[in-house]
Length: 214
Image 1 (cartoon, rainbow, N blue to C red):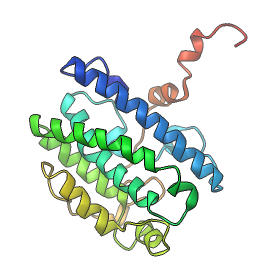
Image 2 (image 1 turned 180 degrees about the vertical axis):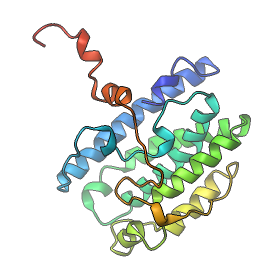
Image 3 (image 1 turned 45 degrees about the vertical axis):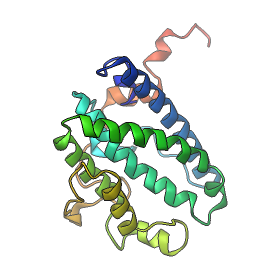
Image 4 (image 1 turned 90 degrees about the horizontal axis):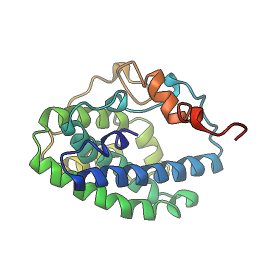
């Protein structure tokens, strides 16, 4: 959704098209992931703002193109590394479905690295890197536990090291005070999406325009 908000506001027409295309890719990826989780017995969470486990960087619309650049260059790289860890795991439903997703994410990474070199996005990249590290979680936490069980092929140190290597234009992984970390929502700071964003994600606003009885 955040990518879609920039599909007619990016600096160039090509960047507009790329934002729309990558947003559509990620919608498809989300559906594959949620479908896989349901097959593995994970229940759906209630549709309310506090139930969304998004990183704080996605709580509000981005007001500057550099925020988009940092999201695509840093956050998306972190998410892709976690998907890579799932694709190399021992859970067959994940191994068999995530390979195509990783192929598509290669183009997102190329776009992110290109714009990171051209844009002054250091401040946004720093925030995106921090949110990514918090989302991955602390060493010795649930990600490392899943790695030890073979459910993830990468541990926390592996993911952080690869993230630092893939986006060298961003600051190195920051030190985090993990005392306030919420392992369910995977964030330290409180907050979340607002009611307007929730309504758009649910498609509630668009239902006003549906034909009667549809």
